[in-house]
Image 1 (tube, helix red, strand yellow):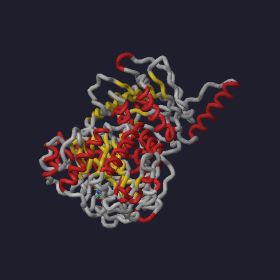
Image 2 (spheres, rainbow, N blue to C red; image 1 turned 180 degrees about the horizontal axis):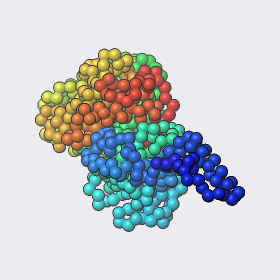
Image 3 (spheres, rainbow, N blue to C red; image 1 turned 180 degrees about the vertical axis):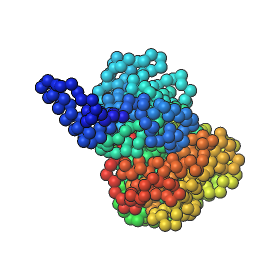
Image 4 (cartoon, rainbow, N blue to C red; image 1 turned 60 degrees about the vertical axis):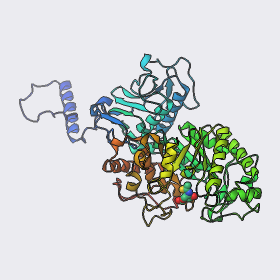
Length: 589
Ligand code: TNX
């Protein structure tokens, strides 16, 4: 603190007689002193050096999903300087993550945050001209007061893990892969003040809590599903959902692309699927479909966020839209009327007609060719009219078609009785965890994605007064979404057979992006934590506080969420949670 200087004493020893110039000096000194006495307090001191910064507003552990290991070092709290540089290993994928980080931080901070990489051959991007920097030796680039993204093949962090070190010399993020760096960036983002989500510059101390986070996921598959068949959603809406997945380290987006009410993906060899089958939706709206270019855009936007798209073509049931377009696929060869209701289980493609398998081979071939990820989801649910051996025979044949187009089968757990095929994955959506048929399929080699209807179905209402959603699997408040264990949920299925967890969002009652967000948030982060965090971190009391910290971030980013009463949100309600809320901003990450 500065101190106020003492005025010239008014009393005391009489000074020796002064010459005129001395008298002038004295008078000036006295005037200055008097002025300083009357002046307002001295301004606050300049901001302290970063390593002497007052504590960051968050704890290092205030992250969703909970990191595997957190070692806070409060003395190392750090403030992002305006002149910080983001430096990365000389790898195009790492450079891409560094650029995403810069794009994430620039709007709110207003800082230039140039991106550089550790090579003599810069690869500039349009708005972040890259400059070469010293490599920093074997340990990779050094943060040098800014942020370093380091790829280190020798680090013990697996294919998706990362280590985040916040220290006096800056921030160092280390990973084996760019995917690990990307997940680390999401953690870094959550450790900055909520204002970092602002789309416009904010005056803020961009403080990060000091210490080290070492983090790897519990399960390799962490996903969410969006039903774009019951209601059609634009590409932009889907990209925004991808952004939400990325925040919480989810790595799969399952798109339910076909159902009775609409066929949403272009198939060149069967064009009426979209021109006729895509023109409806629940409630009679115009529907819509994705061109191949649209779908590729979704896939590449997701890939840039380290998210794999899992396309679902639901067979043999849930196919009314295909039958409207191509009646030869129907058992009676008569086109049914378009369907805009919400019943299930009435439609199916003819399992006895070879033409059906030509159709499936063409469709799955085209979808596989558009999809870089390994998975092809073939549905299989609620085909109530295709029973017993006819059903299992159909499924086994389609499983072979999937293998033939180079993909791995995923299907709803109704596929369980069919024969095993290499790598096949069942998505379990039951509400009664005693399921001997599924457990048997697991014994025969299947792995499980768990999506219990009564915990993970995001189309269930939170409470009786939730304006949209279902309740056939019960109400799912945030605690219900959080308090279960994917690794030990289905009886007689060992944790080792669990590939991961997925939160499906069916959209019979969901008509807008705001509706989607209302049902996704805050339950999606709960499911994400079950997929990512070690079981030892599971703790509702702690989770609800960490989750509460996400609220102001969503508010800043203009994201709708349900202000669940069991979560201690900071601030009194200031945000809309109505379904008609509109949004204009799209966060880039
Ligand atoms: C069951 S879950 C379905 C969907 C519905 C959903 C509504 C599953 C594989 N099938 O067809 O949209 O319930 O919650």
